[in-house]
Image 1 (cartoon, one colour):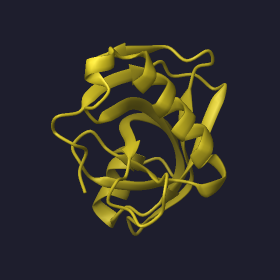
Image 2 (cartoon, one colour):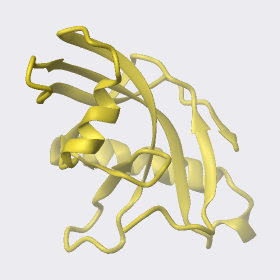
Image 3 (cartoon, one colour):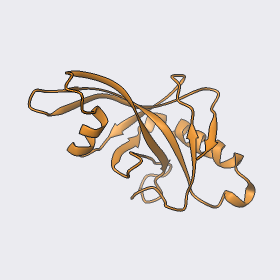
Image 4 (tube, one colour):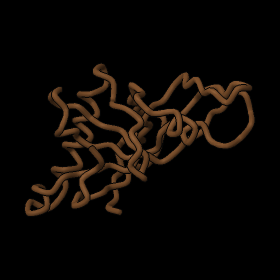
Length: 140
């Protein structure tokens, strides 16, 4: 389920104070995009991603993580789901009352650490949304 096309998009300032871990469910091609093209064995990098409430999920409060092009990365872990929901809710409440009925998508920085093997396979060690605290959100 890709991000809603009619959503309001707000970009959160990247930082290391708030970290939301991601339970990765990406396909092989998306893992390759996350790790990048460098031929280094160990990779640490930041990529843009979007997060939003996954209204199609069977799990209440589920927060989906995608690349801006719509490829699934995964979902925020259960342990960090409440904090992710608080971020989404606080930005939503800061919108004008008439705009709150539209879906909300947050444009975030995704920290990726992992390893690329000689055979091209990728092992993602850590994937996490990183946000500055206090949160700064700007409409895109």
